[in-house]
Amino acid sequence: MEPLTEKQQKVLRFIEGRLRNGSPPSQREIAKHFGLAQNAVYQLVGYLRKKGYLVDSGGHRGLRLSKEYLSKKGGPAGIPVVGRVAAGEPILAEENIEGYMNFEELFGRSKDTFILKVIGDSMVDEGIMDGDFVVVKPTATIENGQIGVALLDDEATVKRIYIHRGRIALKSANKAAGYKTRYVKRGDKTVRIIGKVMGCFKLL
Amino acid sequence: MEPLTEKQQKVLRFIEGRLRNGSPPSQREIAKHFGLAQNAVYQLVGYLRKKGYLVDSGGHRGLRLSKEYLSKKGGPAGIPVVGRVAAGEPILAEENIEGYMNFEELFGRSKDTFILKVIGDSMVDEGIMDGDFVVVKPTATIENGQIGVALLDDEATVKRIYIHRGRIALKSANKAAGYKTRYVKRGDKTVRIIGKVMGCFKLL
DNA sequence: TGACTATATGGTCAAACAACCATATAATAT
DNA sequence: ATATTATATGGTTGTTTGACCATATAGTCA
Image 1 (tube, rainbow over the protein chains, first blue to last red):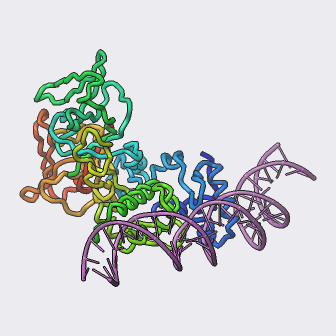
Image 2: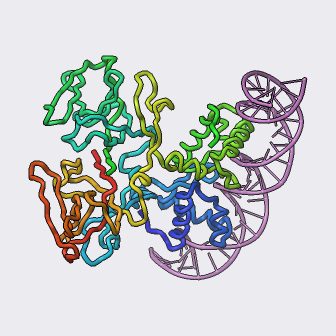
Image 3: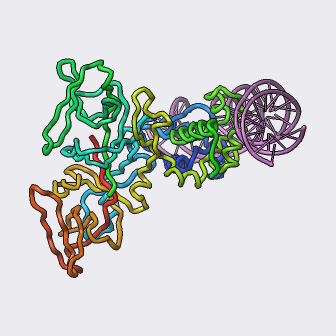
């Protein structure tokens, strides 16, 4: 991405702040904040768009950060990821921070993403335990062997999903109970793949 | 808080969705979405304001969720948590949504919260596996037996932390390798408790 | 010298916008 | 019966807004 001038950075930072706090500012609001004419802002915003930092959604107050820029900086609400922690330094010193993580982007959040509480230990070998939460993204297709959520007899279950000889196979991962595989006919109305599991989290 | 009518709920949910996706909708956008006149929305929004769900920031596109409502539902960027999934209905139908989860609030995020990548299987029995990420909140104190991060010989380790007879004990949770407990003198300079682990997540 | 980038002002304009008015209907509560 | 609440339409108004035009200056690069 093309580098920004100091002025452009300032304006971008202002817009980011406002986006975090609710909604994007109008050009006139930006102008007022920096003591500029509305048009100066129009130009600056033009550069930010041209350089790929901002996206224009069209209408009034349509300023958004571009996906490129968001992924570059780890999203608007990124939490710092710490690599090696050196003894003397403060933990969040710049040297320790490897990057920023943003849950929304991490889990590939889209409008229809949802969270499901896991019941049972069928995926314990994958580190998904009873009481954990899985982040599910509804999809039409699923890759063979991916962990997904399937609706089986009206009950949502988290399973590894395989397509084997035209049949959908749901596989648990639990050594203790044995790796159970349940085959269900494709098109069978009692099974329906809902989506794939993007991630899992637990609260301690 | 005063309960909402069905219509009011629908409008509120629409506004919430838009707020999540960037910026609040205009009254006309809401009206168009529901096939109403702008004025009908003006009235509905008036009720939502009167009942304390929305706050009016003034100008154009000034709709915001009130603090009351936000704290009630768990934050602005909540992902819907789905309980039982009924067969026929769309997954995100109102009936299925039990609530909303917000990572930032879930993990008790503060300014100094950070993420640490877990190396090794020492906490595998707790469902924290190699490659997972833990969300760490720096704290001065830690409750006995809580999972925390300690700096041991300049290496950050995720362990259950016990205070036993004036000594800090770090305990792994891994049946296969046995539950190792390492005792370190309190005040020993080679150990330093950094904070407690608020949660753990993995990407699949 | 000339082209281009970046920053800046002042002015204009059409569209979008929230607010408000008058009016209507149906349900509920007093 | 009457008042209130909730929902709805159509129309008006004054403001906000993004876009655009003309113009200017200062710096960089060919």
